[in-house]
Every structure is written in C-alpha cells, then in structure tokens.
Length: 266
Image 1: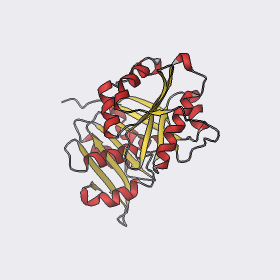
Image 2 (image 1 turned 180 degrees about the horizontal axis):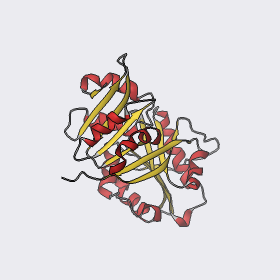
Image 3 (image 1 turned 45 degrees about the vertical axis):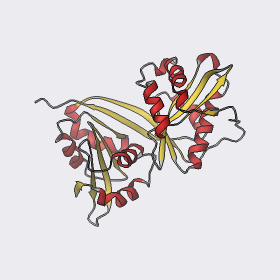
Image 4 (image 1 turned 30 degrees about the horizontal axis):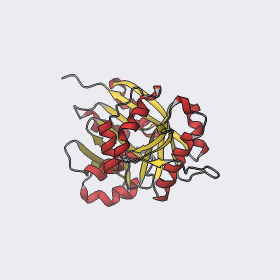
C-alpha cells in the first residue's frame, strides 16, 4: 500500500531512512528542512502487509527521488510521478530507479549516470592536514574564484552569494590550503543534514597539483564530519578521479542516476 506521509509518520520514516543515511542524503535533508506538508514537497511511503515501511518517494519541486532497500511497487511510484504535470526529473540510486524507468520510458529525454561512493571510516594514517584551514563566510569570494578557474567546474552554477549563505547557515562547509597568500586547493560539503553530507568541489589550481593538497583538504573535511557521526558520499564521472577518494576510505556503492523527464503536452 502506498500513501502520503505526514508529520505523524516522521519517526517511522526516519527509522527507515537512517539505516542508509548517505544513500538518503537528499531525502533526509529535504524532510528536515521542509517537512511533509509543503505544496512544493510531498512524501509517499509504501507499506507491506505487516505495516512496515519498505519504500519512500520524495517530490521536491519537479524532481522525484525514490528509495527502497528491496522490492517495491515501482509501477505505483511511476503512476504518482506521471500524475504530476510538473514532473521534470527523477534521480536516485540506479538499483531503485532502474525498476521505475520502464514505466517512464516514453517520457525520458536524457539520463546521466555517475559513480556513487561513500565513506564511513577514513584511512588517513600519515597524512598531515595541519596546513588546511576551514573557510568562513568571508572566504566565499576566493573559494568561488578558485572553482571558476578550474575547467571541470566551468559550468558550475555556484555563486559567491550562494556559497556565503551555505557557509553561514551550516548547510555547507569548505576547507582550503593557501600558498603565498593565494587559495590553491579546496574541498567542500553540500546538502548537509543531521546524518550525512555530500562531498563536492574538490579542486586544485593547475599550477599547484601533485603536491597532495586535495588529499589534505579531503582528509581534514572527512575527519571533522566523521567525528560528528555523519556518513559521507560523493558522485564522480571519471574513474581516474576516483583514485584520490578511494585512497582515503571511499568505496564505490553503485551508480547515481539523473533523468530529465519530458513535460506532458497540455
């Protein structure tokens, strides 16, 4: 049985989601921020015959994120999504979205697959991260300037205002290394919630590569987050780029899918 969840379901919902906090990073963060009763955000749950919650579907604006640990009513979730005239995206773990995809196939315009990795324990013996500083809101401009100078971040929508706001409200944190007064390497989190966080923006100025700076920033970041008992996750496209992450304790955990859904013609 699939039904809308409300604040009355919060305890059972979180008991289910926190079993895999990194995998449910976005669902947990959105529920903590906006709850169950917003017009732009809705949450559904599927229950088995014994009344146990076995799957969750979250709608945030035009994006839907499904999660299930095992079998679930994929057609039922697809019907909910297709009933929304604003449906524009679906994202989630490939193991889950692959079951829904056949029911949306005639509406899918594009899909993108990225590696999904998570870390619950860091392997950082012998790595000195004492040169790494934690950024404050006053560092937002330099952080954005560094990221914008890196080719792979050239299409990023990050702005100084958004970076400063995230550092101020705690939804993001950043770490960096300077050399001769210039910020040359950084690593950040995004979408932080009470149980997990996503690692983003790992970058080093091309003139300062091969010095281990990105690794040091990652280690400092991971040490802090894991000390707060938060699981860490990240997405990456290039297998070669995953080497640095695996070296400090991240393990591949499948794929994260992002689908662009064609709007229904009125």
